[in-house]
Every structure is written in structure tokens, then in C-alpha cells.
Length: 140
Image (cartoon, rainbow, N blue to C red; front, side, top):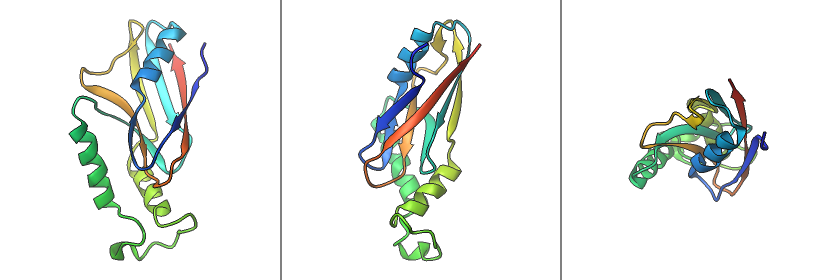
């Protein structure tokens, strides 16, 4: 079976599509039917299944979460005490608590059973570039 850890390099906040990498990994594994479980090993990033056709969807999601949970230096976030790694640190943890850090996607006939416009994304919540590990597991 191929390596089951993907490392995604991010350039700051946003949605990074990893569908192609996971699709290839599942195909190489040769499992006809089963379940693909993905898990991000970080407390300031998330995983989501989202539309991959219109980039406006990603931009709108990014804008929504930035507005929902602004950086700690915003006046409305003055109550936050955890600021060890900067003003984006605790807000990133909050976003990761609101969004999934693992996904389960069925495998049918050797392929991910995603819908026509669905893609798998790592959602980076930190401002600085990071390297994020996503662990993949197949069960059949």
C-alpha cells in the first residue's frame, strides 16, 4: 500500500484541494469497496468536502469564517487569552473546533464516492505558511 500520510504545504489561510492526491492513493491501494478515512494532525486546520467547480464558493467560505472568527487583535475578540503564537492562533483553534478534522468517504468500485462537484480540502486557518499532515486509512 502506498504511503498513507500526505504533507500539504500551505501559504496562509484558505482551502487547499487534495482530491487528486487522495484519488490516486485510493486507486493504488486497489480496494474495491470500503471506506477512506482522512485525519488532519493539527489543531489549527480542518478537512472539508466542498464544491470544487466554482472558486467563488471557496472565497465565500474563507470570508465567512474570517468574519465569524476574526483575529484576536479585533476589538470583539479582546476576551481571548491564548495568544502565544500570535493573533491568528486562538481563532485558528476555534475554527478547527467548529469544522471537521476527519472525513469518511465511501469507496465504491475502487473510487471515492464523491459527488460530481465535490472535492476534498484542507482548510488552513493560520496566517503563516505551514506543512500539514493528513493521515489516510482504508478499511474494507
